[in-house]
Amino acid sequence: MHWERTGIVAILGVVLSLACGCWQGGLTASKGAMASRSFLPQLPVELAVESVVLACPAKDREEYDSLWQSVRPVGAPESITLWSENGLRLGVLRSPLPARLQQWLENQSGHLSGSLQTFHQRQEVFLTTTPLIERCRLRLSTDLAAPAVEKEWEQIVGGIWLQPRLHKRAVLLLCEPRLQYEERHSWIRPAPDASRFLRSEEPLFERFPTLQMEVELTSEDYLILGTWSGAETNLGALLFGSGASPAPVSPEVATPSGLRLLLLRVQAPQLALNQDLPEIPPPYLRR
Image (cartoon, rainbow, N blue to C red; front, side, top):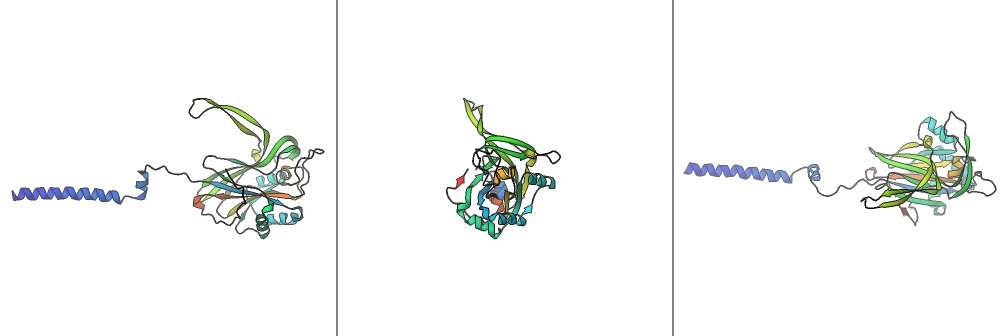
């Protein structure tokens, strides 16, 4: 009997030790394993692009041109040349910003528009840089091997199309100048639950795919887009010239009396941004 009791006690001890070991193992499971068993939804990383369109007075044309000496060029040489042929400029600035640009940012009367575009539910966005233009005629170059052609548009709004995506510790930002028509295209599509049909409207764009640029941005980078101070009757004068408003007498884009800049900065949690870009005054558009 004594040996039988001893055996039973030993068996019970082994069983209890195994049970305790399993229980303790459950408590000391790795965070990754616990996360994999979690029923809570994993929130996606929120990517955003902060933008502001600045108006530079005509008296500051020299400062506007000198600003580009501090800009780091981006893109392939062929793409940079093609942008220049169309009167367009872009490049990257690092914090801290040049003093003159900082003054323009702090002068809120020069802010034509500003927004924070989030990309949780969307993949692309179109940022306008001009008001509605009734009619214009431009010299357009979309191929370095071909001569520039003249094109005419009516009822358009100019701007920059953006498509960002995360890449390691940075953001790759695809940008392209585009013209948006005032006219919209109507579509009939089924509802998400397939219970009925819905009518939706989408804007129509004049695209320039050969002018697409992909830029890699970090937390300390600012993407700046603009034109040449002497640009006339081209895409740069249209998008970034304050004198590009339509004139009933001449449909051509006038020589800009003032100039515009589009300043962009990307935001993502893993970039750990420094908040040194001045706050855009209300109304602040979050879309």
